[in-house]
Every structure is written in structure tokens, then in C-alpha cells.
Image 1 (cartoon, helix red, strand yellow):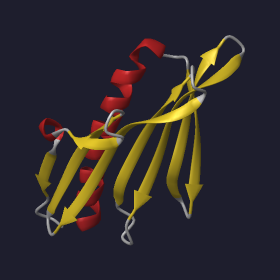
Image 2 (cartoon, rainbow, N blue to C red):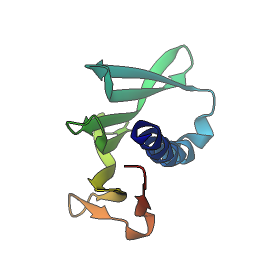
Image 3 (tube, rainbow, N blue to C red):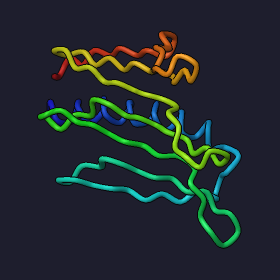
Length: 131
């Protein structure tokens, strides 16, 4: 039962993450290709490419971290800056598990301060009575 509820919570978090991804990729529907990297059966990174004619161009990069219970604890999103030819920080999502509660915090990169800034309006806290 705990596993089933965990997967429900994980699915909700994944849906929230994918919504953020979908909003940023909306103008490229059907033109995105991804390359996933796994370690010990867990996805640890994903690079998303945009089709540019017959070639693929860098678009977004995601990195994931997990705790000892294989629960996602962090997701970092970077965007490709074509002018500078480098990856730039964009979004950090952290997941905190306390007892039966999962808190998801969203942080947006502030290039002037060179740090992630909490976006409190996007914070989600869910209680899971089966944990």
C-alpha cells in the first residue's frame, strides 16, 4: 500500500514537472527529441534537443538526484544559450519528505544574483496518509 501511494505522489510530482516542461516547450511541439541517462535503473539526466532541419540543436538539460529510498530529491533544469554556446541554469525543484508529507519547492535562477530564488507561489505540500 505504501508503494502504491508513493507512486501516486511521485506521479503528481512528475505531472507538475512535465507541466513546467510543456509550457516552455509548447512552441516546439513535435520537434523535440530527448536522450535519457540512467544509473542503477534511475534516470539521472535527460538532454532535450530541438529538431533544426536534419540536425538536432541543444535545447534543455535536466539532472536528477535521489535519496537512499530512491525518492527524487532534486531536479535541475538548464537551457541552452545559443549566443554564448553554453548551458544556463533555469529552474531547481527540490522534494522534501517528512513523515507522511512531501513538499515540492520551485526555485528560479536569478542571473544577476547568480543564485536560485524560491518561488513560494509554486510550493506544493501534500500529505500522504499511507506513508
